[in-house]
Image (cartoon, rainbow, N blue to C red):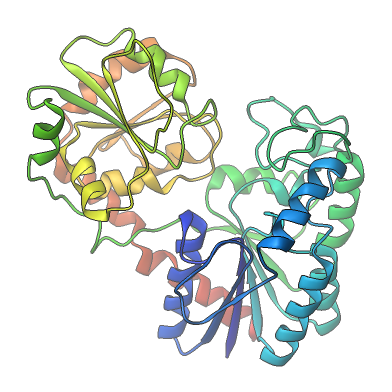
Length: 394
């Protein structure tokens, strides 16, 4: 059996790592696997790049003018389809197909004509909106009927001139609904509920939470991190993201920093923004050193996820696996990672409630958090995908 996965990246970022983990699970069950990707480079051996950097830049530039992300890269997509025809997959698994590298109309036309079974993991809301990947910040529900006059036109995938959200919505509805043998997987029950209210509601839909490698993510504290920053006697509140901005809760952390007692320090890993005049926030650029990240997780006292847009963030799981209790905003599927033994859920922007629950979270035992993380073992989570492949092929 042959599996072909398609994602923006391969082996990098959360979705790229998930794609590789699923591929390895499928190989253990006897599948031959290839991952097709559109951006950056990868050292994963069984891979195929769709297009190149020039094609990415052209696609992105046109999209920023026309608001037609996913409607360019025709030559790159036709070349990829020729590769698919030769590879002849028994099942195709889509992840993120936005990202300026693929023409989705050509892809779906081929899949429909060849009657290839399709699994599609939704990592965000883009497949059923006319433009955006998340609509929470705009409090927008146009996607339930028909998008138009998008309030997030300038957000990713940004368009600075045209607004074709209504046309995009109609086109996606027509194209994405055209595949009969398709199973949609969401990474959270929250997102599943949204899909069941969208134009894809009649499709087969299920939830498989993201998983992590529990053999890699585990408690490992040497004390060196605290010494390095001179915070041996402080209570560390940790945030980790691939870049901090408004959506990732940067301003929420700033507001919290103004109110926490002196015995606390906030550490933000992945933050390149200089926070002038805020001495109790330590910002650290994104680290590529896994052991360093592991120690930061392990030495902190509480993990704070103050994101305002998210699906099912794996950083929560990584923190739990290192024995770190999680306090998260009630955003997307983020609350689904914790239970009453391993953390707390707080409504968005409620800094006063954060101040109440953080001292309680500090008292949660590492063992309880580690036990909770075992619910998200990637070996169990991603094997469920192979069961879906088997069912669709049969």
